[in-house]
Structures are given as structure tokens and as C-alpha cells.
Image (tube, rainbow over all chains, first blue to last red; front, side):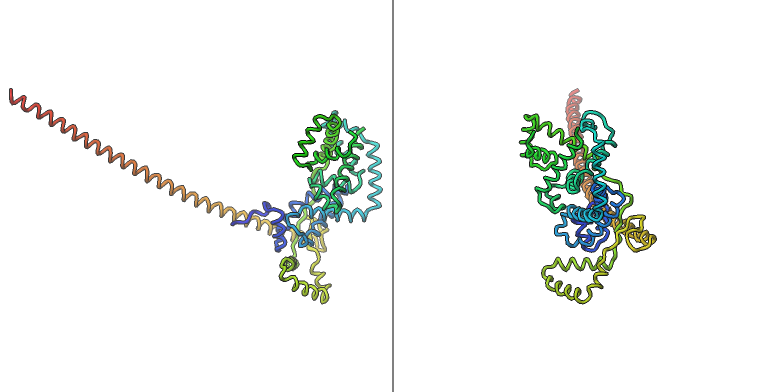
Length: 191
Length: 219
């Protein structure tokens, strides 16, 4: 039977091919997931200029440790676990700068916050760009763990159980983080 | 609503974490409870605002993985060793030997294979021209692989089309044969009928002639 074109193959099949020494299979995984990983890193760190280097680091690490992936079906959460570790290391390295920046952003955002009722899709019309900026600021004011849990849930669509694996914490902690993140965002955005 | 547990469940509902039975139960409750209904509206507003904001970002450059054949083969060798339970003991002995005998040598060989950002030189110690050339090679290799896959699919499709065409032609030929047989039968039948008609006409004519002969004889 003829093989499927590489772009149609599942993650698990590509992982198995990559482990069998087919570099084009690993490249297909890179092509498939690089934008998702990059966007996750941009949203989490708020540093688009560093995100590409971090993204590269994630895939180098994934390649090096691919043999340790126990279940090829679980490639996606495993890849984001690596992205999480990479981002955490980077943020630890930049802790001082990051912390100061977060406080600045939070202060700025609180001063300029509009009521949620004025957002598009609610009652009055705010420009899409302005709303995005506002939510970005509100997200930056969350703790890193809460922000990450919200990003993994809302943007990446992971299940709570997968987020628990990525963040290496109990399921109940993930639920608390997402819930607290939503609560804080709601309070932040409401009058 | 003053009930954080219920509010947490409402959020789980919005985030698609509940089983269908739980969803039905909550839907019923929300229809009857104004507080919960307001909570759902608020949570949906926040969720919608997040969905609008947390979108996919455009990458300034794409990543290209540049394989290093010897390392790759060795990696394959490693995984196959670890996968085979029967060889686990041998692997342990070999690894012990490797680590005791030449750890530094293997560490060098097992270093990460470079991943280069297309059009950038930051990925490794290679020069920008090398990275560009390797990236181009890799793109070419992948295209060749894709082409091979597509060609194989095309060949298979063409073979199945040929087979289908042959079957259709065969069916058509058998159909024509059948139609011809039916036509022949019809012609045969028509010929017999016209022969019979001819015989009948001849018989009638003969009868008519016979009936006229005695009459003229009387005259």
C-alpha cells in the first residue's frame, strides 16, 4: 500500500518515523506545531522578540528527547511540556526584569481599564484592536501560572488533565488557576 | 450568585469540560436561575474577549531542522536498543562500557542536531551560507519525499483507474454481446414469422385459385 503524503500522517506516525531515523518526519512535526508553540510563547512571555529563539530551543530539546516520549499519541502535550519548561527557565533567568515589567503593565492597565459592558459583542462598540490591547494587559497582570493555564485552555484547547501534565501539578490546581484567572480578568474588565 | 462552586461548574461548562449529562442539568438550572444566567453571560464575555485576543501569531521566520546523519543513525540505534526488552541487559553493559570508557567522546557525538531559522544564522556555529545551503538541501529532500509519496499515490490511483476501465469495457462488451444475441433472436423470429406469413399467403392464393378453377370449368 502506498504511504500517505507526509503532511497527512498523524503525529504518532511521524514520531515513529522520526525515531526510525527519518528527519523529514521530524521536520513535518516542526512545520505542524511551530506556530502554535511560537504563539504560546509570545502570549506567555509577552516577548515576541525572544519567542523565536525559545521556540527553536523547544524543538531542539524535543528532538534530543524524542526517544523518551513513552506514548507517541501524546506528542502534543509532551511538546508543550517542553515549551513550558523552556519558558519557565527563561523567565527564571529574567525574573527581576520580568517582575518589574509585570507590575508596570498591571498598573498601566488598571489606570486605563474600561468597563466590560463597553466591549464589542456586549453593549457598546469598542474597536477590536483596543479590546485586544486591553485583554493583553489584563492577561499580563495575572500570575504566570494563571496566565499559562488560561492560554493552554482557551487558546490551545487542552483538557484540564493535559494542562495538569504540562504544568506538572494536580488537576485541582489547574482548575483553581483557570477559575482564578477568569475571575481576575472579569474583575479587571468590569467597572 | 454567591456560590463559587456553582460558578466554577459554569466555567467548566463554558470551557467544554463537562459530560453531556452534567451540561443538561446545568442548562435546566440556568434557565430557572437569574443569578446563574448572569454569571454565564459574564463568563462568556470574558471567554469571548480572550478568544479574540489569544490568536495565532505570525512567525518572523520558520524553523528548519537540519539532520546530522551519523547522529541520527546513532539515535535510531539507541531507541531500537531500548525498545527491545530482550536486549536490555546487553544494552546496559554496552552503555556502562561507553560511559566508563569514553563518555566525553560520545557526549560530543550526541550533541543536539541543529535547528536553523530559515534565513538566519543564529542556530548553530555554522556560517550563514552553510545554514542556507543545508536548509535548501533539507527543503529539497522533503520535497523529494513528498513527491515520492504523491507519485506512489498517483500510480496507485492510475492502476485502480485502469483496472476499473478494463472492468467497464468487459461489462460493455458483455452487454453488447447480449444485445446482439437478443437482436439475432428477434431477427430469427421475424424471419420465421415472415416465412410463415408467406406460406399463409401462398396457401390462401392456392385455395383461392382452386376455388376458381371448378367454377370456370362449369361455364
